[in-house]
Picture 1 (cartoon, rainbow, N blue to C red):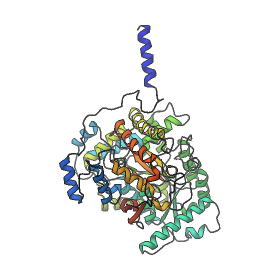
Picture 2: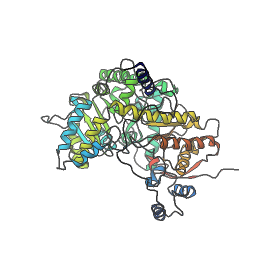
Picture 3: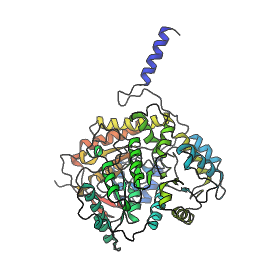
Picture 4: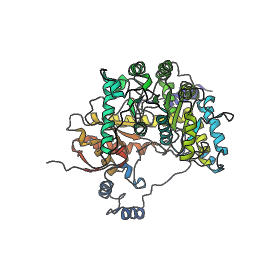
Amino acid sequence: MTDDVLFFCQEFEALAGRRDEPGRYYQNRAYRNASVSFRNSTRHNCQKAAALLGTDGCPLHSITARAELVTKVGLNPFLFPAHLLPGCDLLSDSGTTTMTVEQWAQLLLGDEAYGSNEGYFELNEQFGVTFGEVWQQRFDAPLQTVFIFHQGRAAEHALFFNLARSLKVEGLKPLRQRLAGKTGDVYARILAEIERMERRVYASGQKWEEPVYLIPSNGHFDTTEANIAASNIIPLNLNCVEHRNNDEKFPFRGNINLVELGELLNTIPEHIPLVYLTITNNTGGGQPVAMANIRTVRRLTAEKRVPFFLDACRFAENAWFIQQREPGYQGREIKEIVREIFSEIDGFHISLKKDGLVNIGGALLIRADGLFVQRYPGLLEQLTDYQILTEGHPTYGGLAGRDLKAIAEGLRTVVNPEYLASRIGQVQRFAERLSASGVPIIKPAGGHAVYIDIDRFFAGISNEDTDYKGVAFVALLLIAGHRLCELGVYAFELEGRKPPRNNFVRAAIPRLTYEAQDLFATAEAIRLIYEHRERIPAVEVLSGKDLALRHFKSRFKFKQQKV
């Protein structure tokens, strides 16, 4: 090889390693398009949809007509017809993945036998490969430990509903009475959560029963929190100090607050049926959790014989951040890091619609020799009965055999380091583009979404919590043709809560779906709204304000600005 050729080899290598300028690309994507889907934007389809919705004009070909449609659906992005979006649909990264050709091939090979079909055995084996052999269902075991569901929230509902039925309240004082006289921020937050539940129960006309148990987490997501509360258990979020202080240099803002967790475990361990850690921390800005944090939670819970569970929806993305950011893990493979994470816990639920890279599917896995089974020996039998009654046999859980094969293939793909670098790099470039425009976002960027900080977005501008301007911001973006989600004052009922608080609008990026042009066009629409944020109107709640999970169901309208 000549010196000149060697020179170019070295320069090409240096070019591929550059990350210094947002919007410029030095590496190819880790994948190429095997098929494309054109947007459903023909004038005929728009007119047909407009007639169906009783809307004048054509929603895609006229922005004013789309504004009319946004008004028609009550400014709620969950109610807006997805096929009429001309831009990015960033409402969720759940089930919105573009599957690989290998996954599509597996769909054609599906075995649709009822119960214990071929796909189940393949998926069960892959659970052992991905998470560790202890997570496989042993076929000579007397009880089921692997439960398949149609999606993650069905798995978490099964867990919390049946856990609540197993908990004993005799001899335990209600939490409000148990904590009487306790001082400190964490106890104040528990009491505030009890009062919030009490208001909700009275508003619904139901009988109020004082909760006896609580489940701490680094950040319960909306449906997780609702499932826990529906079981009359307090869901409690313990964000780490670095996240509360908006420390943009701290690499693991998804960590649980170990001081507060330790205090609760020392004070009221009998009131804590399990501790839940979400990886990555979706509610807290999509932020990762450090391995050191996971190991410390294991130590604290083991000392008090309290089971430790994960909401593992984005386990591979979290493992990638550990590899990139945590000392001692730079030389480790993603597969190794994943198995180390799952060696520390007693069970987990997962929406496979995220890091399973599929459009449907979920699971609940419980370690046969873990603390959970020891503490609740009858619960595996209950879960099996519950699943048969609601979803089907635990070996298919509401899914077709072909879906199980696609999930197994997705779990093989998701730990590919090239895929993860491409996936998370795309999210980070989108975050950099927004930040360069001055839009306040949670930094460092997480793995699956960019979170716009609504409190800072409206800093210096009149913005009462009850104006719900995060909802208004999302509605304006719908008019622009892009769909995001408010996860803050309205979704999590944060009205009147003092900072720090998680008051965000989330742009969740589907996997393997969009390219830079799509996301950067969304960034430009966000920039335009941000530059004219003083003109964003307040909104009025038309219906749904007192409902559980109200952000899924409510309707709003823009208030007329005072001149």
